[in-house]
Length: 118
Image 1 (cartoon, rainbow, N blue to C red):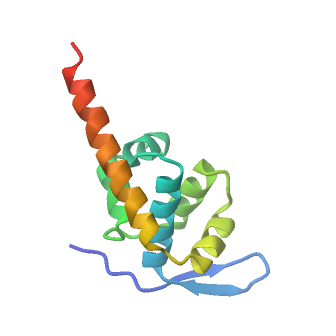
Image 2 (image 1 turned 180 degrees about the horizontal axis):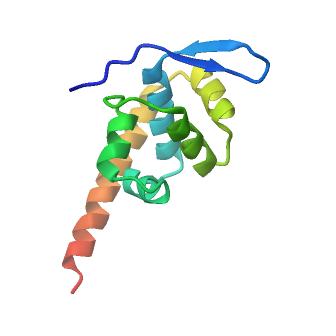
């Protein structure tokens, strides 16, 4: 069953409610990961979750929890609120998809090299 989230409601310390698309948060997390040249598997390991589970959250096919957002934010040295604020202002560019493609190819090459090792 696919998760179809439309809006995340976040209550900040000052009681302001910020409505933001869960898809936009997921896309921002993916962009942040790609900019840091980190694989999904690397982050998933640090967050103690499977790569498949992490991937489904990044692709917005599984619900994002605030625990997940806070954990990802912490991985990148941010707070959950900072990550959500940055995601709210995020506008993906075509360059971002090029970075993603590069990182996917890089991961495949590294995997192929690892398979060749005795």
